[in-house]
Image (cartoon, rainbow, N blue to C red; front, side, top):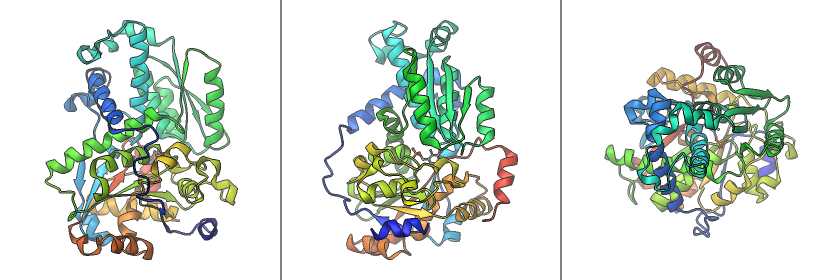
Length: 427
Ligand SMILES: *Cc1c(COP(=O)(O)O)cnc(C)c1O
């Protein structure tokens, strides 16, 4: 395949999804009702979150991030239409998009245990979840273990939340994981197991150890529907935020959303929710490092998790540590087949350039992985493939009215000295 040759050369490119809009009804068992159920569960847990994480008190225990217009960045990038930043980089607790999926999955598991063991009654809608933060409950949860494999940010999210609930926590960290993330976790009492190899082995070993222990629960980043649904809740929240800012999404005002992609759960969940809500009026794109374009490879070949970037001779090693994944989630790739418009790839060096540009123009810091999002709005009007996509849908004339959301997936927890290091990095 032509596209594989280009991926092997680590070219920056866009791949348009040939299956877009075909067989849209296929949701692989996922529906908007599941997303609504997830949102309700997060609401039930809000009093608990507020107690465990006082930083969320101003939002009544609902973990959500700002949506801000970034006009100066838009000018600097030459984007047509409006450019907004979805600042998951500012999410409480985990400081990244992982706060959505990771926290949700830990809470869902907690609810199941609590109901089974009578800490919560049957009538969940009328229960006070705040009581789960009591010492008595914490002690109960301390007999259970939560484990996860991570390149860093998922570990932070699962680790910090699980420790707050009272669980024993073991996080299996791949070689890409940054040292400060491991240290931060250890400060929360989390056991960090380090691996010399990539993410897949950390996951495999973590799962094996967890399966041996009946009181241990493994968060499976690759196949978890719970993580996916936690991420998907973001779409419902975004709709409310767009409306609050009087931003229309319809045939005359197309919405474009660009999300950095690693294994696919976070961008996949958000995209699933957005397509359910906005249908053909939203155009979702993922952005991957040209050194680790695993979702593109999986979707373009149709092999999904049956192929990894190492199979085509790439190392999968990238400065975008949150996106350093060699093998995509097969489940997410399939759900994305009719829903995703396309995938951009971006070189590592450009991530630092976008990072500096955002800091200079808007005084906002986001981590390099998150900066991948900007490749979308910057290149949308440049590549012949995306231009053809817009033209064939009658969108070219509507671009003045278009709205672009760059999904800033992480950054808040990055320590000052690491930020300085990033700012001085030129590749
Ligand atoms: C994890 C992560 C992503 C992508 O999420 P996946 O579920 O792995 O696709 C994007 N940006 C950052 C900063 C992340 O940590």
